[in-house]
Image (cartoon, rainbow, N blue to C red; front, side, top):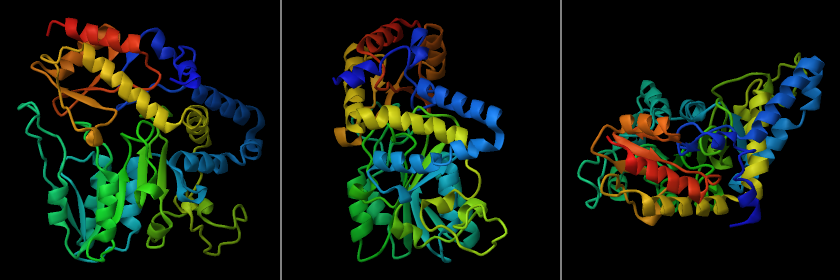
Length: 393
């Protein structure tokens, strides 16, 4: 374990550790202390200097584009600051030039942010084709929502398929898509161009995710889960190829190249990622999410964070009672930062009882979800498993 990773496990940076063992990073993560400082600095500047805050923070979005670009190993012009995943998906779904009869393929149990935006395309008579749920044979018989199969996906593709939109990690089970295989399918299917759109809310910050190397056309992610940033912040990556097909869904002054020359009303929109930042981004939220990226994820490295999460998961599985907590044990290429378990009792009751003893977990679709992050320690993981083993439920 690197020295920088060890130093980032301190209670000073994550004061929630003083009272709780937090294992719900697939829900809402505790806000990183550096982000709190960034927010306070911005608010004080706004309070004391009024309009001059715009001058002091003039390069904030530029810095955000650069840092997020480094995180995703892409150019800054491919990055946009978003409020959330749904906003990003909606912009893509509404600005793409679908024709009547075109098709989008997704999964029947996607998170709503990656479902409802595509439902809106029905007004243009676009078809949303949903993959069915597939349960591996070795899973506990009580498991339900799991994942989808590549074989069915290939069967569902037709000459009218324009997009495939799937989560990198399914929020209920933790099933992880093989992005390189998906990309290869999209780019090689009978000389047909299919755009690959990825909801990375449950992976960005916990798994390596490099859109250009992996052949992804768009990535949308919220900032308050694995990135440990503020609620109401997010990231959108779009490839130049995808943007060349998109129209404009929202418009405002920040969309235009003429900047604050507000009497110049010529239509001169940005063509890079700034096209989605159409008007007045929340600088306070940008500053907070930027601090998370610059102070945590870039210095430590996402590959190191991923390995640490894997190590913590192994410790948990060594100490938890696997007869009471039956693990959805995906293969290595389909595993993620989320460990989901089938239990005999109501998982929401387990969440409440564990919380009373200082352990934060979550429940979705009848599963108990355990999601440690890099700053948790092995001692915390062992202690949490002991607490769960001792629950009389």
